[in-house]
Amino acid sequence: MPTPEKAKGPASYFPSIEKTYGQRVEHWLAVLRAAGDLKHMELVALLKSAHGLGHGHANALVAHHLAGR
Image (cartoon, rainbow, N blue to C red; front, side, top):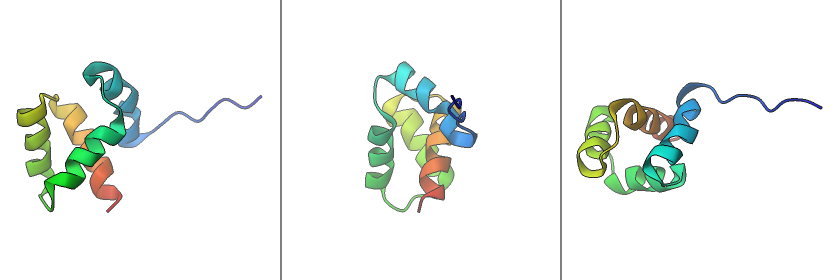
């Protein structure tokens, strides 16, 4: 039986983000979509200041969000 592939890059943070903040990753991606056309660090700052996320978690979510644009 094959083992599931381990997430890499920003997605490797997703289980910890969901556990730490009690929201699914899709919630945070919706917050980023609603924020509009801001730059990377502006989005990171938004997640940190308005939602209390740590820098690493905020950065991982923003990197994933921007890569999907």
